[in-house]
Length: 227
Image (cartoon, rainbow, N blue to C red; front, side, top):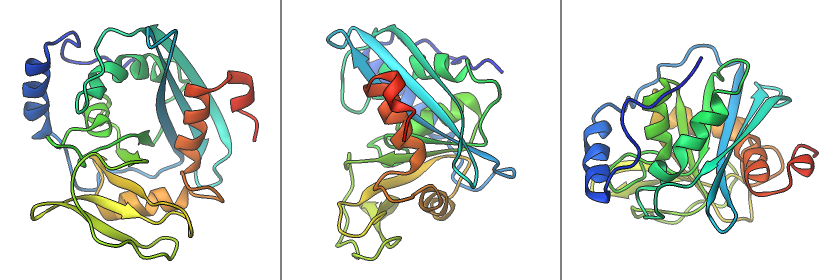
């Protein structure tokens, strides 16, 4: 299947913000998943002083988390680095990488935010709307919102809130390390998103999906696929 965005990418920042506000209304925050037999990780890096965007998609069997396939795509970077608008900079290359796969994954975990975004349209939401696939945002840092203390026990979490709205979860994926930020992307509830993220955790802080994708997006290709 070939994924294409229904809108242009070379927008002005003000037009991009308006598009985010319009697309946010399309985000589905309830579970609309089929049986999940594969999970994918998506991450983006940059080469040649940010002139080239390098996107990686890694597909793992679920629940075994064995490698099924992966793809890397490169294209010229055409959108400036603007916090809150990173999906416009990154998704075009992500779509190129997804289009190289032999078959679509059942669930995508994005290195980045979903609803935990000032306009409720992080990269996981934006990508989910375009592909019509269930997506989850898994961020290493907080973009917006506030939260209380996170329990030290692995698998425990506390709500990430913006005023009275819960926009994500601050999840202790591994005891003794900083938590990660999980949020709904598309076609999934927060509780289910947390469950799948934890089922993709092995001995590392990050789920295997985005951990592998990060290594492919930011490191030497041949080393990235070896454990």
